[in-house]
Amino acid sequence: MNFFIPVLVLSMYLGGCHSTPVSITATGKIPQVQGHRGSRGTHPENSIPGFEEALEAGANWLELDLVLSKDGVPVLSHDPVISPDLCLDRAKKPLSRSIPIASLTFKELKSYDCGSVPNPSFPDQKTAPGQTFISLEDVLVWKQKTPEKKVRFNIETKTAATAKQFQPAPGKFVDSIIRLLRKYHQLENSMIQSFDFRTLMEAKKLEPSLQLSALFEKPESVCKVTHNMGVRVASPRFSLVTPGMVEECHKLGVEVHPWTLNEESDWRKAVSMGVDGIITDYPRKLVSFLGLKESK
Image 1 (cartoon, rainbow, N blue to C red):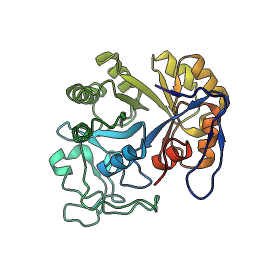
Image 2 (cartoon, one colour):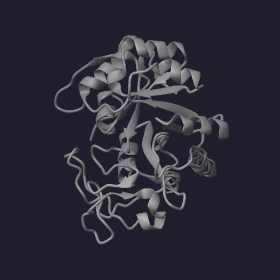
Image 3 (cartoon, rainbow, N blue to C red):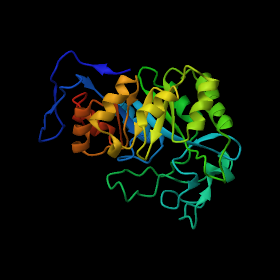
């Protein structure tokens, strides 16, 4: 799963007019690049244009989020609602309120425009007018059209054990995902991640071979918790990661893929600690920083 290099020291350069060397001395390993929600820094999140950008940039993984529609379709969205900050209504006008995605069918969801509204958090993000909600099946069909381009899917189930409304049963949610991964022969190329460990355990029951990743936002025994669940990947908030954590996880056979790193200084720290993967909103910049491909 990792990309190892046979040298003790590797100098890598950030593309552009200035070059800053990065030395890998501890592990001789280049971390894998995960495009967060595709390429959120440059394209609408969880969209085909964003995935196309990450794929072309050379990302190893496409990270995406799923919720279930009213009719049980796995739909790409980070939030359980249609956000007024990101989408327009069916008449292409601003939304007056958030709308629960689980209250609408997939056909109804596709009438919303979530590509025309600029994201103020990402000033370099391009708009994609007319971009609407897409399903996991849409993504898998899209990927079939470019079989020569190798990439894997990191699929986050957006559920919470404490939430009371608009939450699918973990087993039902995971089953709907695994059925599609089987249909399109993507089980070996996919990983399910979640903060809600119930979905990870359900996935383990339904498809023991499927790779899983435990997400962490707060300080806790990241490595031991992940290992004790029989999960091979821990994905903590980057501020939680220390050299000691990475060493402990590796001793337990657990990989470390922190989120969400968008600055060169953080990439440098992550590389120096020997993480196995980096989740970023700017996959092209990270690929260039790691010296894997020239940035356009």
